[in-house]
Amino acid sequence: MLNRFMQSRLRGLVILALILMILPVFLGNPFHYELVIQMAIIAATVVGLNLLVGFAGQISLGHAGFFGLGAYFTGIATGTYGWSSVPALVVGAVVVGFIAWVVGRPILRLKGHYLSMATLAVGFIIAIILNNERALTGGPDGMPVPAFEIFGWELSAFGRYSLFGLEISGVQAWYILASVVLLLAVWFALNLIESPIGRALRSVKGSEVAASVVGVNTAKYKSLVFVISAIYASIMGSLYAHFQGFITPAVASFEFSILFITMVVLGGMGSTFGVILGAVVLKLLPQVLADFQELETVMFGLILMLTMIFMPRGLLPTLTAVIAKRMRRKAGGEA
Image (cartoon, rainbow, N blue to C red; front, side, top):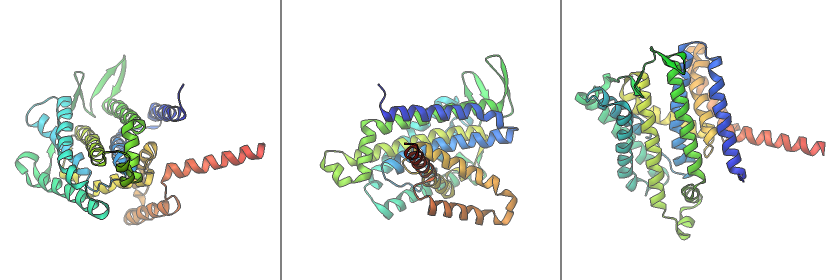
């Protein structure tokens, strides 16, 4: 018999899958599809970051560096050396995971502001390397990335494809791929959270000293979740590069890192579905505020500030708590 968490986990996945199935009805043009595909890729990235920040209690202000490494590894492997897309994505994830393990071992010994500064430095170093290695990365000008190849298909945003007898456009094919990847990312994260590893991570977040006393190898689990979150970022960076068709060092920028961490905090640290909502809101807000021109940045910051003042736990946990409270009041009134 499924326990309460498994029922909640299954319900959340089913709701997310239904939303992704129904959403194309409301997407009227390729721009809408492109925006939603970017949302799905970035949402999957912050689902991985949430494992590190929300469940293990570790900060990372340079996570876009791993996103950028995945994007550039794929771009160089497929564009310069002629690799197929899937092997390039997998090998890139392994390489980025190894880099994360190497840099994570020493910096995760730090705490508080020192850890924040160390992860920030990692992100800056990666961005500087991508900018300066012109012969390999194209430098600030960036580099083109070939179309994504899977099952003999070359997924191009401008292509036409036949799927189970149905004609679909390139952006629709990418939407299907991005949706499947997001669902898999969420499914893996939810299973990891409820596994012994997830329980160890939560104990580390609660108190490293207490976790060590009861036998939890805190250094091991912090390194492990840092590597997992970096692999998430690398895979999504690879897909992002293929979808965009062109990348610049901006994919590893400090601004991108701050965007990722803000999505986690805004949606709700420790809430897998909350960070997805955070990603959607932060990708949609610039589109909604575009008509305000020079006031766009001010209004964007004001909305975020008010949200964090009145919803400090994040959007989804706060909304869920409000709904649950009203339901209890209603049930009490009927009784």
